[in-house]
Amino acid sequence: MNSIPYLEPSEYILLVDDELDNLTVLSALLAQQGYTVRRVLNGQKALNLLRSKEPPALVMLDIMMPEMDGYEVCKQIKRDEKTQDISVIFLSALDEVKNKVKGFEVGGSDYITKPFESLEVMARVENQLGLRKLKQHIKLEAQLRQSLIKEKELTELKRRIITTISHEYRTPLSVILSSAELLEHYCDSENEKQQKHIKRIQQMVQHLSSLVNDVALINEFEQDQVILKPITLNLIEFGKILISEIKLVRKVKQKINFSYQGHEFLAKWDERILRQMLSHLLSNAIKFSPADSEIDLKLIQQQDTIQFQVQDRGIGILAENQEKIFDPFYRGDNIGTIQGEGVGLAIVKKCVNLYGGQILLKTELNKGTIFIITLPIPKN
Image (tube, rainbow, N blue to C red):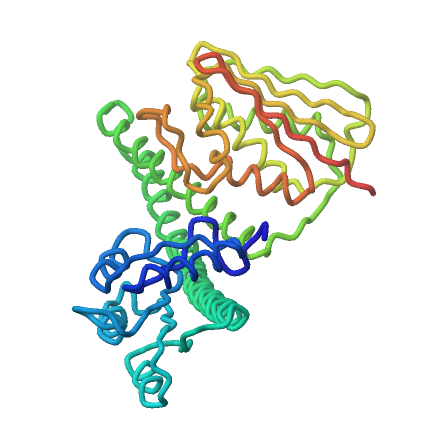
């Protein structure tokens, strides 16, 4: 046989008999059917093999053996947590009912009387291996079911935590920001130390507010709660305004270039989704680029698609990190002390997926990265 039902290539059947002739005949029969066989002449050697790193899939065990009989061997197999699930088929010339009953009482799964018939042996072997495989499937299904239950519980817990954070944190953060603005207004504008601390408070609050909003948005995506609300947008005007806003809020030191190719940039888009997608890409480029470098945003209109390209001259992305960079909260191995939580690119990817688009990246270490997003142009 070319393939063995119920057994993996590395699995084997263990034969235990003090009669070498019996081992030879039985191992030849099993080998003819393609099974891998190991054989030993006494119970102690069998137990040593059973306790090794590669225990057998099935044990075929003689009863009448010196020093340790088959019943005792089976008892020890069933006593050990590591081996108790291995099926044991007894092989014996003892054919009285009491012998068979004792075999089942000590944990045997089946009983073959010597001299045995080849067809009977193979039928019983395949039956036990089939039952073993069925038990494995049942156990695996139970583990999978339990894992799914735990995953569902964790997902629900995460949803509750994120919902709590987004609702309970926003108001205090708004109060802190308003208070900082009042302090800025009433404090001595000539006192540089005071103004510096106020600015730091404002920056941290804005950072936390942005993080809360980002995490809440990721949760919306994962709960399939994001609904597109398209409005007519001119992408050229939208791009110019977005760059101006980012420059103002982030006090960008890099030069941001904006260019476009095509003639029709008017279509119905969800402004919030586009803003999230492009602002996170641009913020990422700013964060990982030298202050004196340039960043490019390009719009390229094709027949039925629009392409957004964001290129920086930053640190680049390690090859081993590229498959993971769109995972929430993942941070690359080469970013050092650069601040960030690893949510921006996850949001970008989810925005792209929402529109049924594609995102590609080209990167070279210490020379920069270009993200290329292609979205189908919405039909009015």
